[in-house]
Image (cartoon, rainbow, N blue to C red; front, side, top):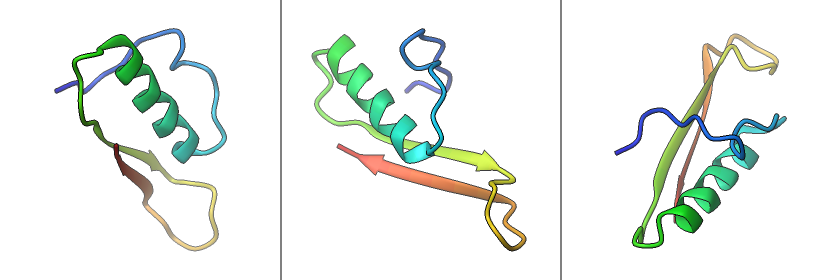
Length: 62
């Protein structure tokens, strides 16, 4: 289980956490070819949306 990623390909800015999630999954599957499934959850504190949202999250499985 990985809790922290510090890879140059992942550090590029993303406007959407959905896009970042997809890039992380793609990277993990390319770098670790024995990985069959990836489950990722990314949260952003105080997202720029209307209302009082403490955080926004995205969860992907591939």
